[in-house]
Image (cartoon, rainbow, N blue to C red; front, side, top):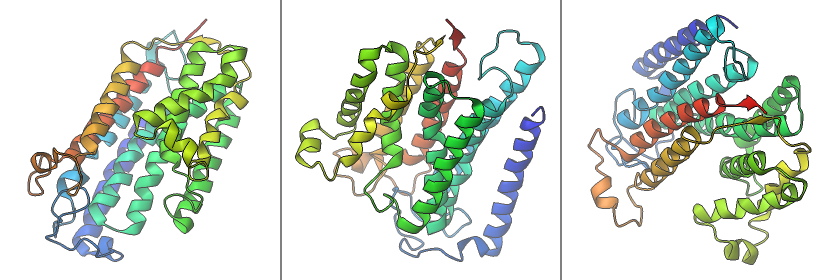
Length: 321
């Protein structure tokens, strides 16, 4: 565990070297779909290049995740040397290293999609997003459900494995209309509100918070109730309630890092919406310049990387009641 930082650094450097080598030989693009030929405008605005990064700005901006993840590991390593006040995110342990690793993998995952334009690259990108976003709400359930670290890891990796296989064979919504990434954003907010305001009564009312989150992202309650079969997954808003049998034993400071992380993510999401060449937004023409190195989607990567750092600092505020 003490060598987590140098190991992660070595793996990150090795990944980049292998990517460059395979890119230069052309092996990396063997399964390229060809739906976005060289010279065309990609689905994320940037013009497709013939180089080893098909979308140079959108691909290289993912280095931000790798840098932040390594910085988290470096911080955790320093904690081991002198910190007396500990929580899960102070010092190296299986869960803190897992969080840092998930942040690091957001970089290679997204880089493989924007860099190679292959279906397997898209799969790697989507899997990296899932590996990060399920961590926070499962971590909340761990505390309120009194799970051991072993049980947390078993549930976490079970979800990752099942999702990875299902996504590979069944596609983005797993053949059942389920957007696990979007759902997990709702589950995180629901579990975080429940963590802060836990009570026997609110435990079972907490699922209603999910409808507020859905509305923020453009899905109104009316639309949900008018199309119950399409939005069947809202029933999963009550997953935190099912497993949160106990009030949390810890408290967290939500200001500034949680609020800053959420504000950064929402800002990044607003910019993300402008990173498509055919968006109906009135801002499309001014935001989408396919030949510029300043790409909205690249900014989304950098801002969300910073958000993962904010959430790391937020979890470090956790203290026993």
